[in-house]
Image 1 (cartoon, helix red, strand yellow):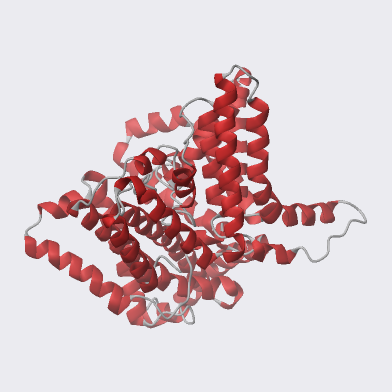
Image 2 (tube, one colour):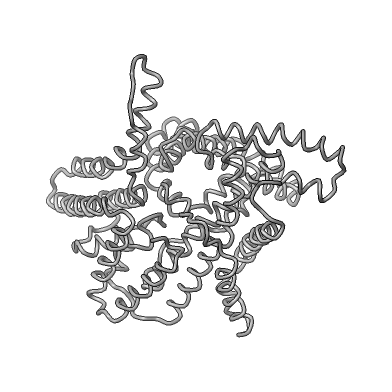
Length: 493
């Protein structure tokens, strides 16, 4: 059951209706049953794994708190619990990758038939695993008290709006499940509107852009340099519309049920540095990395001064890359971001001085430069392997030279330019819709940067508000790419 589907909307409506009429003290049970039904429909073989990790972590957290209260040693329980929780992720996601890496470097070593493990990865495993680890760390550090009620804790781990791809649940959500609010019209309608906008971004923008991206990345050498570069830029916006669309549906769904999730995006493509980008992109994950990986590593390496900070940063982004997937593309993706952040750290004073001298020019250049960097690195993120990523880069570099020669000879007429985009999968009408979708995506972010769109829309007259709602609904119905059975990009992680 995809979040961007009619079946999910009907499921959410049914769960919401039952939840609203259920007494507050028992509402956790409705959410727990609904969440396990939802997960069982997606990954029936691994529902027991989700339940087992929930029970183990609940018992470990309770034991940690009890032993600490009695003054007994408890650190070993914490580490045993963390290793146990991570074990399925390491075995299912990373063991084949590690085995293949060993087979390549150890003479005589061979690993047979490890590729099929890739298909066994349970949906959402990467997300709810680190959510549980974060909870255990919070209990171990006495930031929170462990939840005594196993049912509420199980609902926190498996809550259906975010169990598959986030936003990563924070420990504070348990408190919301302990004291759920009653029905509130404004909250419910706010959640519906946010989920509808997320659906629009997914089926109208992301899936439409995905047509050209999939075609070009499947065989980059068959296209012109302009077409390949165009597809790389389209992917930059596809992955944003796709993932932020999912997040909006998840956050909106949870809001309908009376639960407020962590925002996952804050206009990331308005960033003027890679560091700022990571303060705006996938916030629940970047915050998790900061709190549970980077800060502890920085403390561990603090005696090394700046070298320690650099080591902590690079190691954090190595882990970030690996978390996204067990492939060299993701390792390189993470490390390139890490190296870029180190470069920004080392040139921070120089960049600040340059901006003081020419603020408008430098802001414009850093914005364009950051977007271009993200576009280039996302090629690695999208490519199935490093060979395809290299083929894309090579085709852009050589193809643009060929295209420039072609346009010089033929004249830069609309027909000549159109011929360079032949085969990417867009008719003229689809191209207009794709570019309009990108413009809308960025335009909304620009407006959102100053005043939240929900606040803006509330100030509009009734005809403008309802016109916007009907336009979003009509866009989904008439321009949504429902003929493509595409899952969300982050489902694969």
